[in-house]
Length: 265
Ligand SMILES: C/C=C/C(=O)SCCNC(=O)CCNC(=O)[C@H](O)C(C)(C)COP(=O)(O)OP(=O)(O)OC[C@H]1O[C@@H](n2cnc3c(N)ncnc32)[C@H](O)[C@@H]1OP(=O)(O)O
Image (cartoon, rainbow, N blue to C red; front, side, top):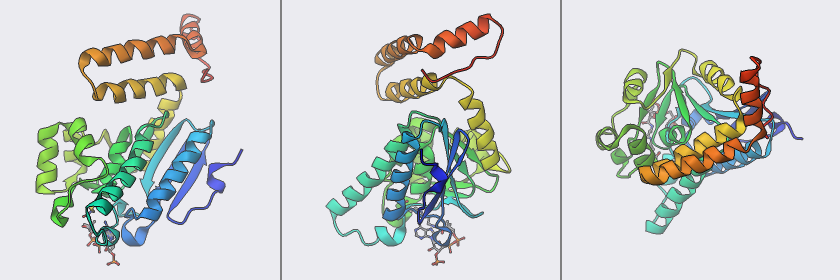
């Protein structure tokens, strides 16, 4: 099997540390802005992560010490000529964010600086966000005559509520890490967000992998539906968890007062 960190990309780096994969966007001259090449490299990298059964969690971060990702690449956006090109550009970005948000393994954003526009949308596609004290987060698209197009209008509202999301999108203001924490926009603030993200990921990968994927699926599908339909989804997926070997192992280990050895089966 190919080790993830043996592969070469132009605008990102993919590293593997045991069960953890780390995807680092590396366009420091443009504060890691997402041009179309970088977006397609992210899609390729995520495909490799999905195909590698050794990887139990993914961390996404930005190279350098200034930015997570400062948005979609504005010089490329400026070239968009008509309504169709604009729509295609949004759909292309949305596809990559959807690919990340529907990964069956936990995905953690280590937000080490600016996470603006498409950069915040990338962080929003992850399950959990860890911010450095210097991080600045926002959706400033209206300052460019645009609206968020990589999922921000939908994911930010679902995460922190429509009122708070509208405040951020209509003012275009950037929030610091502590305000982001108070808003529920990030889960943790840490001086070294990558180290903290690793700690959180390590805690997650100790748990039963199929159960992790079912939790993600239940939350994702439930957000798009009524409480009643969401509870049915939960019951169905609970049933699937009961059919796993890991459930037998987890309950047997508890009763025998020993540590569970999950196999993802
Ligand atoms: C669907 C999605 C839509 C979107 O995402 S729209 C884009 C949303 N993002 C933004 O509007 C943020 C744009 N960037 C900024 O406002 C500023 O940057 C910062 C506040 C993040 C930092 O400001 P400072 O410290 O003064 O740095 P600097 O000189 O502006 O940036 C360093 C270099 O990085 C390039 N850059 C920064 N962000 C982007 C970007 N989003 N797209 C393309 N290039 C970007 C700059 O131009 C410059 O480059 P050079 O050194 O060649 O002048």
